Amino acid sequence: MAQAERDLELAAGLYEQGAHESAYFAAQQAAERALKAARSSTRVKSSNMPVFSLNSRVHVWPSRAEVVAGLRAWVERLHAAHPELVRIGYFGSLTDGVRYGFGSDADVVAVVAHSPREHWWERARDFDLPDEVPVPVDFLVYTEDEFSRILARGDLFSRDMQNVVWL
Image: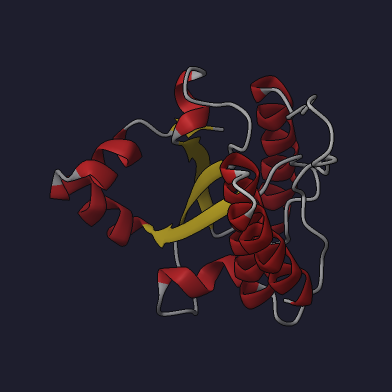
């Protein structure tokens, strides 16, 4: 959480200096780190976010293929360790290859047969963090019944879930 606070201070300083794109990136990094710290309060792990120098004009981000390969390796490990895992896939910018780019994360959804946790936002704690994936991962875990209800809603999120690329 301390790193997230430092990143947020950096973002504020960059914004004040007029470096809005770098400020946005630092703020996003702060949010990702704060979320990961909150989700894994019992497990401490450094961010998967690629590191770069703010003084450099060259910024490299992992390719979509590298991210998908990392997701495949992580999913293979999860299937071996979690018999309750029905299916897992990615959605969002990774699905079409057009919207994915610098600063993108990996949006991942898992469907489980059952879970001892009542709320979907608590269930990610039951899974190992994705060391294989070179970008931050937003990980959502739903039961089969919850996922069916999401698909039936017909809203924007439901449409995203209808276009999940299952691994």
